[in-house]
Image (cartoon, rainbow, N blue to C red; front, side):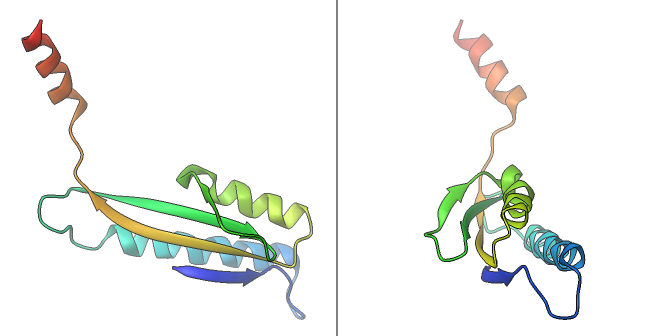
Length: 105
């Protein structure tokens, strides 16, 4: 998802617009995480980029999406752009790593 969101609307309050944007982003993330995994993968990682107004997109942490949206709203930005890309990855359980370390000792 690569989309520019306007933080102003002629008929809605800014708080209502902001909550609608957050809801759209949450729905997109849930939809991506429900997709079946490709072969040999078991986790969806979401790569995120964010930009205020017409700035260049910059990498951000997944946990900081809502925080950056709130900051853009507080700074009275007209709009912001967000890019979310789901990447399937293979994870290794921590327990498995601990067992391997014990065997090496």
